[in-house]
Image 1: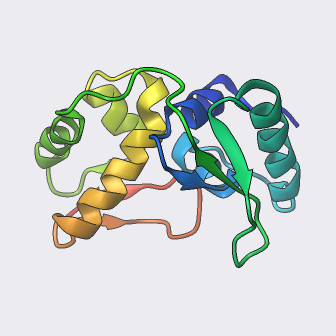
Image 2: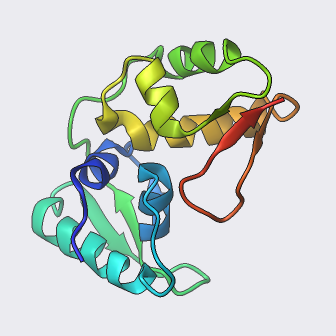
Length: 151
């Protein structure tokens, strides 16, 4: 199994200090895996990181589920602009009630490159936790692609 360009861009888009697993990459890139493919995907992510990202991402201890974790130790590309979260917030605030969207949709609607999809997904999760708990809900828990609905 190989990872796609979008998944590579998600990995390279994670911010400095971010700790993530292959499951996060899967969720943030909106990849849908067949039952039993998680291990293969994890190996593909590790192979890509080891081969192409060793200067800015390190492998750290496994999490409580036994998944390998990675930490971004340097910026791969330019960091997002200071108003990045505000741009995503503006897009989400303008979604009408009943709108179903993914982090890729929000990325496209904010006119951001897909390279930022990982950061968009993380930003959406933070906004839901901190500001929009009563406005946005996750539709499909523990599934990919993660879909959100505006209430």
